[in-house]
Image: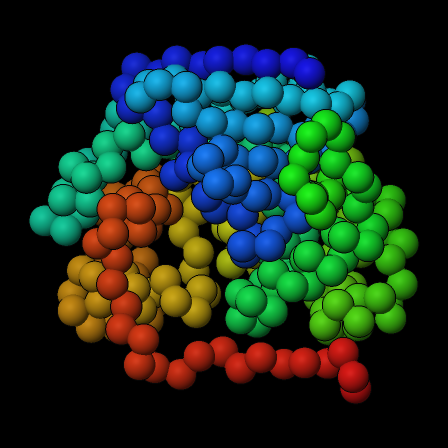
Length: 302
C-alpha cells in the first residue's frame, strides 16, 4: 500500500469533485462506503489501482492506494481532486448563480487524465436513461474487467484495457443492452486509444473538438468526456435531455432548449460547465418531474 495526504487552501470536498465519475449506485469502479470513503479503481499505464479517498480534516484529503498503478495514481492525485482547477476569472451572473457560488465556493473540478475511461461510459449513456447505461457499464466491466487490487469492496473491478474493449463480441454488447451503433463507437474509440490519451496534453477546447469529430461521438459525448478527463470548466453538455430544462427552470422558471441555454450561459464562458455543477452541488438546481422521460429500450431478448 502507498498513501498520500493533500492539504488545500480552503475546504476539501472530494465527494463533490469526484461525484461525476460514479456511474450509478452499483458502479463496479466507484463505490462509497458506510464511512463516506470513496473507493475508486482505474487502469493506468503502470497498471491497475484501487484507491480509498477520504477527508482527513476539513481542508485535507487522505488517499491510500494498492496495485502496480498506485504510485502513478498518487502522483496525479492533486489534479484528480481539482488542485489545478482555476476559477479565479469566474464571475457569476444573476442572483441564482451567485447564491450557488456562495453555497459551494469550495467546489473544484477534477481531471482524471484518462480519456477512454471517461469516453466509454459517456458513449453508453447516449440517448438512453441513466439506469440503463449504468447497467450496461456494470455488466461489461464485471465480465471483462479484472479483479481490483487490495482490500476493495466486494464486486469492484478494474476497467478493461483498450485491447479488450475493441475485441468484445457484438453479441456481448447485445446482452448488455448496447445497440450496434453504440457498440461500434466503443470499438472504434478503443482502437484509437493511444491517440485519444494524448489529447490530455492539448488545450481543453481543442481536445473537446477533436473528440467531437470522432464517428459516433459528437458534441454531447465529447463534453461529458472532457468534463471528467480534462477538468474542462467550459464543456457544456449541449444535447443533454435534462440540463437545458434544468437551467431554464432554475434561472427563468420555465424549460428552455439548447440554444436558449447557450445564450443564458454565454456571459459565464469559459465556465459554463462550472455553472451547471454549482447549481447541482448547491441544491439550487430545479426541474419539475412532470414531463416525459426517456423510454427504456430493452434489446437483450430481441
